[in-house]
Length: 116
Image 1 (tube, rainbow, N blue to C red):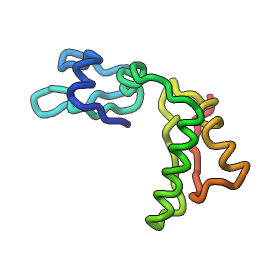
Image 2 (tube, rainbow, N blue to C red; image 1 turned 135 degrees about the vertical axis):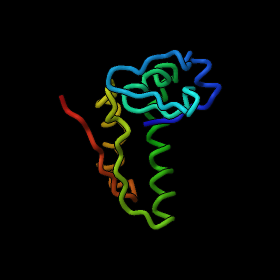
Image 3 (cartoon, helix red, strand yellow; image 1 turned 60 degrees about the horizontal axis):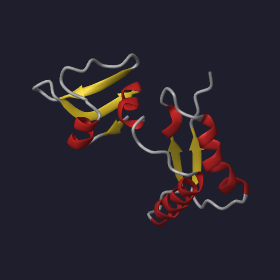
Image 4 (cartoon, rainbow, N blue to C red; image 1 turned 30 degrees about the horizontal axis):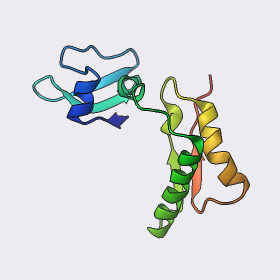
């Protein structure tokens, strides 16, 4: 699930007239307008427009997140990030494997993957 603000919804053409995607839901408020909550495959609407972030940038962000959570006493995180339809298993490995293989990450991560 993900969130999109009103500007993102407008830019990507998400309106009250838009039908839910197969396998996903566009959450709506009491007036039938999109609330910004995108569930499962509905996330593709906005994700397809976000530029790809380089692998090294994703690794650095993961390292920062690991240190941040550990400072707050969180020692284990379950990551469902790539579990939505159309996600890239390859990207998940590119992000996690170097840190795990070098024992670099301070936080224990469980990466949930859907294999087809």
